[in-house]
Image (tube, rainbow, N blue to C red; front, side, top):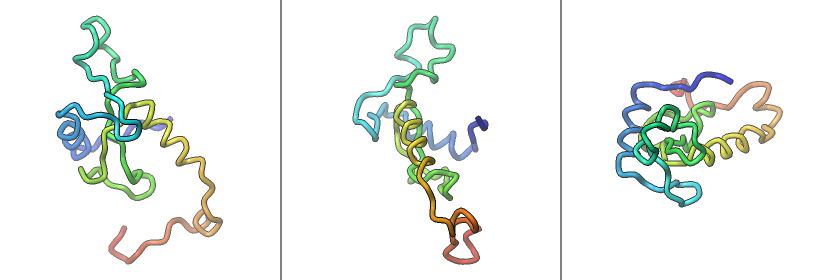
Length: 108
């Protein structure tokens, strides 16, 4: 499994997005944050399926960015489930062979 992409813009926007303790945008239930766990269980709290993450609306693999407008709050489990479903979609043969078409030369 490839390492997670963590640009400075993503990290900054993630903190901003999650500071109000929002609910999951995918299922609507409350998320868990580091402070919700007992002190002895905080070592790897982010691996819990209900832990708060920032989900990319348009995946980075599909040309999405780390901009705040492309992020939404989601449980780790909901985020993982959504990404698995998205990547199992069969793409058209033209797209498989030649990649996604660009709108203009500036979209590189």
